Length: 336
Image (cartoon, rainbow, N blue to C red; front, side, top):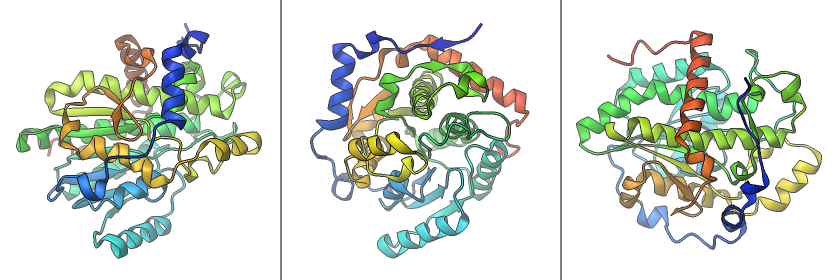
């Protein structure tokens, strides 16, 4: 039996249409300024995926005390080191590069183990890295849709590997640790078919944007389910829509989709980091477990099925099944 969450006209109800349009075009200007309002992060350890470009790069510029940043797929060490050097020159902070290809579960495991060897404290994980609408032919060597593998499965595995360190950090500090997962306004129009999470004839009948939208729906569902499962262990899990931004996430798009991106992605990248920095650091955001954050650091309303525990349990089970099939296992460093 195929697991399908089809898009229907009810998803463009007045409520959802209002959220989609207001979060995209009528969200005003930011009122929370990281330089002015972000609390002192001295002694905090942070991991940012996709920290070499776009929103991730703007996030690492915030000057977190102990920062580990990684690329997503196809990020060379030289590009990452250039971004780290720029960070040092502009902020005086030096990040540590973790080589990571989110579309490769083996790479995810190696990156997590490298981080855990350096220490076990982890206060904030930004599941930020991602890709948008590469050519439909783009699939991983293990048969997954490249967009879903990068945006969802890789982050799920990385989170699982780092969760013990975050739970331990929360218990030692007596406060919560935070996992911030990037979603998108695209989740409002997603039509989800689990069969297209992997490559095949059905997947190739879909458009690249369809595959991107369903990955962002899954990111939001994952964040909500993570909140349900680990909220009582000191984890605050939040889904963040960064806004319509002029970043290079759409660098792989072609034709009409490229034109559409240029017409609709209208806000500067620095604004995109505001929502996730607010969710990850603001004192008042410590009570946001299981919430959806809209631009520019305010509580929004996701598509209702995102918050359905049945969808959360189903997606979580599917993701766990993929890890079992690939036999990637847990890190031997998790409990050291």
